[in-house]
Amino acid sequence: MKILHVVQAYHPVKGGAEWLAQNLSEQMAQRHGDDVTVFTAAVTKPGYFWRDEGGPLPVGTETINGVTVRRFPVYRGLRGLRRLWAHGAHRLKLPYHDWARAIQLGPIIWGLADEIARQPAAIVMASTFPFLHMNVAVAGAKRSGKPVVLLGRSTPGMPGATTAS
Image (cartoon, rainbow, N blue to C red):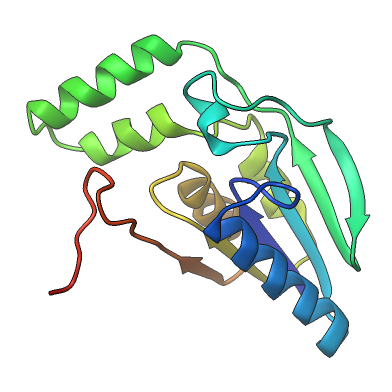
């Protein structure tokens, strides 16, 4: 089966979503013989999307442990304006303030929805919220009629996170 995973960052980046995407992708490729492709941002840390944390990785395609990994360039413009808009919309409890937060956090990858729609995958999996690529993955999958699986996450202490008691 052809599978497309869309994740904010991928190996060698360290993090929970990155670990999950890498392990799922490699297991599907190695154990089940699936043709797995990962679309991800070309960054060393997701913080690079909205602040000066980490840096860029080379844009392009490589194969890691049987998984095709395609890294896309990230748009970092208007970061201050995006932050003010998101914080103001949240503070004022404006409609769609969650969209403002997703746009503020990014990653903004021009043309990603089109690339997802063109990818010859049977299914699209994306992780994790609240990053913008989740919405873009749904839009790209919808354009091409592909089913999409969303893997969320919540980190205690993260703004907007809830914990079970």
